[in-house]
Length: 425
Image 1 (cartoon, rainbow, N blue to C red):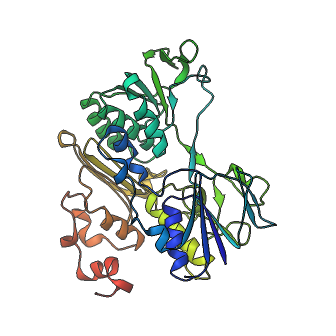
Image 2 (tube, helix red, strand yellow):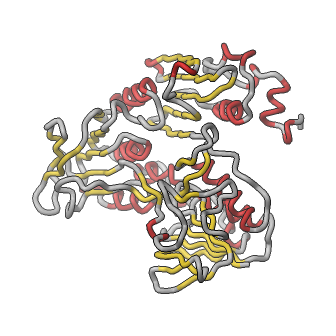
Image 3 (cartoon, rainbow, N blue to C red):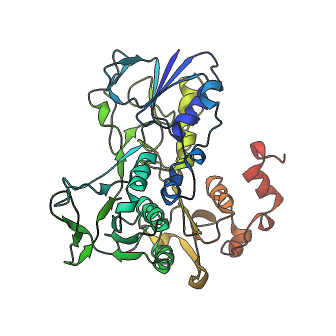
């Protein structure tokens, strides 16, 4: 059996393990356009800022690929898939045959057609190790930076550049930073911390023009008419599924590659996992892109098992976002901004002076979502309560406490959450 995996991030790692748990003999080939083995993408801001070295970027044992007998093709880009002939075409002109194929290519940064941006040298995106390396390589020639986008990617880019002593302004179109993953109070807490560290945050505005002569940047003009001087621009508006190479393959791509609960696409024998897919949501059952690290691994594991003949199925993705900025950790999960808040009970607690904020969203006697800022050590318990649909009535009053944990749960609930098959270990 020839297994081919396009992409080499966490979904691919899950798939490799999923395959080898069932099939120890089949051939596994991994195709990656990046030149690095799997690494921790959340670490790229610390690599930029000098807090971690290149040696600490990887999270796999040195012998992982050898131990799992993987043919790893780094620096190789897939440019097409022929689903009829069952081959992957590479930019080099080579073709790789497959019996089962997994697409785990993640997302590509989206750069909108902003006036004046074309031809400017110091315009960057910030999603890969190489992005961080490029910025670090010219850091001596950077003084003032405008980051377009106040989401997870933009804030991490700002943190890395701040560690290098650069002057940074974040420009966000929404009324708050982290608008997609967090609510308004949580965004305010994070913005307060960033401003305390000297980072300017502008909301409800956007960049309409990049100013400068030739390749040089002198600043940006905002929709409001304001001008912000800078020499470098980071575009961090978001990512799109990296699936353009599938054109003509018969694999259906909507907002992401459409997959079923086996992680199989619309073409039999071709699977997809991670940020590139549109999979079932845990709550609604609808299919949505969900670019979340733990979920990508789970999807990859299921895809790998299915490719090798296993029976695992996907129970749906639970929206979860986590970011730590200037030593303030934040996590959001589940439903955090209900469209119909009257159908939920919402509990909140905040201590802005200490950068603490909590929001608990209840639907009847079940936990539907949570936002935790400043004290996130027991976030796994909240995720378990949501996934296992545990009745929280008896300890509802403790959910906002920053020390909420195992002590507030009954033995039966602890067993349901953490013991194998729901039985005490």
